[in-house]
Length: 249
Image 1 (cartoon, rainbow, N blue to C red):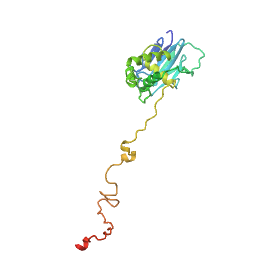
Image 2: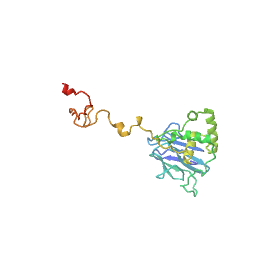
Image 3: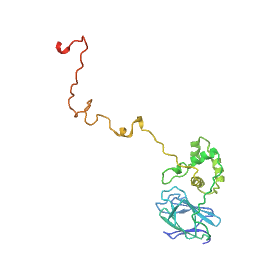
Image 4: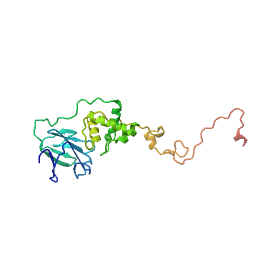
């Protein structure tokens, strides 16, 4: 087989890579489907650039992607590398050999210049992907438009410009690849958790405390055993000139 290919070790199936981007996952819409529960519906991409191939973990799975046993986010592949998508093991082949550092990260050192509105669009795009969900896709153009209170057509124009600025090639899952690139560059980060005070200003301990009489006291009692008769307290002295009711009785 000419050109780069991937071999699925469990089945022995050998599949050629697409000319630019090959998607891998458990979903029906991917290029290479892996029937393994630990693999996300859209797990990773194999990208060809000239004679080179690199793998990109899309960050949408808790199980991740490993190359020769090492977890990666993005890495240049060499002929014979074992790539694990979750628990599914594959082996790369047909990649020309060259003295390339396999640990080199293909991230751009400098992000392109972005306008304030473009940053807002990217933040809204990546917000779902920064959650703790095992699989979640970036926001759609309609969801971004609703979030930013703009038209969907305006969002699509911004996305087209962002694809050009980040050099995201045409193809399937373009929004996902853009979101992955933005997160890899550190342009969008998860928001810190927001502390929500308890309702009514009560502390968590007070909120868990049941209402009603406290232990060791009956209704209206302060101290003493439950149900015990109330002891009369000291009588206040009668005001001068007030009749003595006890004497009158």
